[in-house]
Length: 129
Image: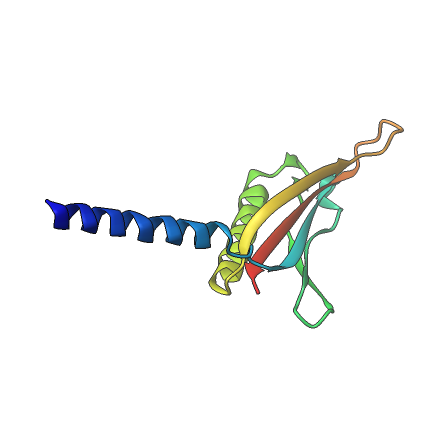
């Protein structure tokens, strides 16, 4: 019984020391990357929808996306295709060690009651340095 108590006390001491070191470990340092999608809300499909990315060298990589509207109105197939493009980009970046930290969205429309505008989403990713 005495040996069992010694083993239990030693084990508890080891666990307590491990937890102290774990709580005092420095927080990881991250690097961040952002990409933005701008989807045009212009009747007739006349707008410009794009995915804007930093290609890693500080220059802009601009990829075309589908406009939300066609000549006959909202085009669900275009929304679906844009979703596929974003998902593919997120999967590619995930393979490079990036994780989606958060997103931020916004809509801009004219104040004069017009029907034009943009839908913008920012994707902020991070990975441990």
